[in-house]
Amino acid sequence: MDLVGKIAFILGLVVSVAGGVGIDVPMTGLALAVLGLVVGALNISGVEVQGFLLAAIALGVASNNLEAIPAVGAHLSGIIGNLVTFLGAAVLVVSAKSLLASAKD
View 1 (cartoon, one colour):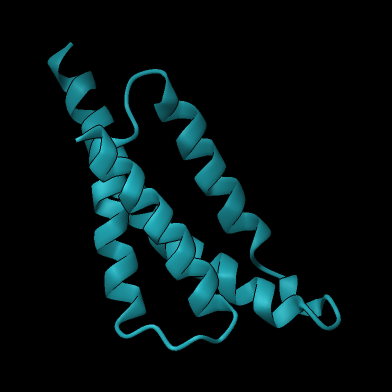
View 2: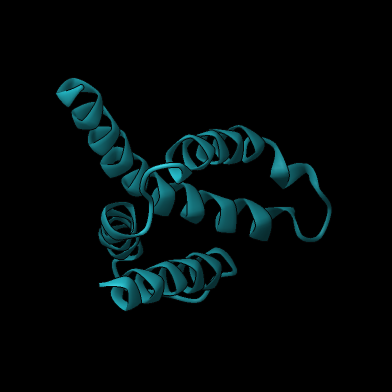
């Protein structure tokens, strides 16, 4: 399972960058969401939860005004937008796992 999680993470990054720079990836959003669910379920656990959730929030906040950067802003905005989609699905799983663990205590 560890290998599956690593592959899903790498594929998520590749699809995010490819889609962000304009390469046509069929059903990009769905692919990123499914990969994000896999990453959230298999890769993030225990002590990583708080840092992962904080990083996902920071990425979402940082993605707002990237188009203002000349020449590369549109590409950066596309890449970060895809990463937010990818990580958003992972955040849902990690948050649910964290809430369930809290409820058990």
